[in-house]
Amino acid sequence: MKVPKLKAKTVVGAVILLLIVLAASDSFCVVQPNERGVLVILGTVQEAVLEPGVHTKVPFLSQARKFRIEPKSSEVKFTVGQDGAITKDMQTVGTTVSVRWMYDTSRIMDIVKVYRDDRMITDAMRDNVKASVKETTGRYSIYELVEQQNKITAEVAKAVLERMASYPIQISQTTITNWDWSDDFDKQIKETANRTQQVRQAEQEANIAEAKAQVKVREANANLEAEKLNAEAVRVKAQAEADAKKLEGEGIASYNRSIAQNQALEIRLKELEIELERAKRWDGRQVPEAAYVVPGTGAVVPLTTKQ
Image (tube, rainbow, N blue to C red; front, top):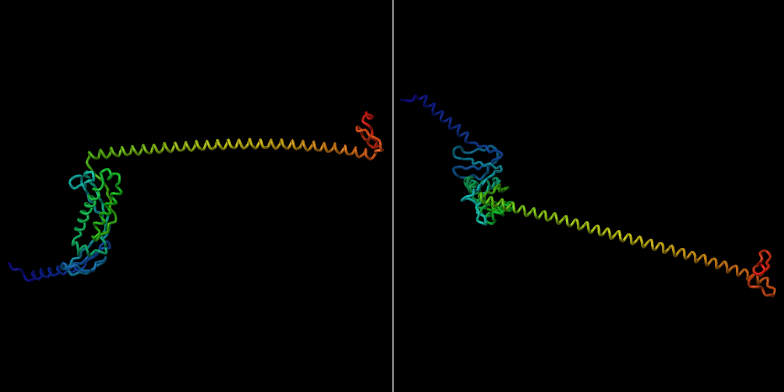
């Protein structure tokens, strides 16, 4: 059947229009703010990184490879079986490891030039995480996995960083979210944990008892010291009272001596007055020793006469 010329021209025009539309739509690419792009023309990687925005490209002959640069999380799981990690005491364990990472924006070109496909990077991430976990786990017993989880996680994170250092990514965090082992060994772990807890509890109780005993010793020492201080205070007080009484007695004795001396002086003065008066009135006669002077007259009278 012969196609009418008008219809043939219409079909050709439609095809050409379609090609123009496709070429126009393929002449631009849009890179989002959370993306970076690399332009590949006929298999050749262009050197400029496509920053966020609209970019032109050769239609049908070029391809814009775009990579999201926001943080990603890769999770690697081990099961208790043939792919599990083996501990130092030959126990097979499983675990779940989560790695937080993102593309290094300064090395976006390497993703295409060196690795061709970002799947190679994610595959390398999975394999290196497994190798790091198995290598680290082999240095510890299964009991230590339970007791030293933070230390083991830090060693795994360090090993992953070292193994992935050459890849165009930045790792921000590596965590081990779970450890798994056989049911039989799980029972042993629980029993060991219970015994460990009992030992720790006993140690705590012993420490508490020791602390209480120390408090009692300190209280006893404090009481003894207080008693010593009280006894010393009593002794000092008694000594002070004795000293006071001694001083009081010495004062009284001194007072009495002073009175006696005063009396003796008065008596001596009287005697001297008498002798003086006798000397004044002496007429050459003998005056009796026992005599007194009559007040107001100056007469000397023997004591026998006074009586």
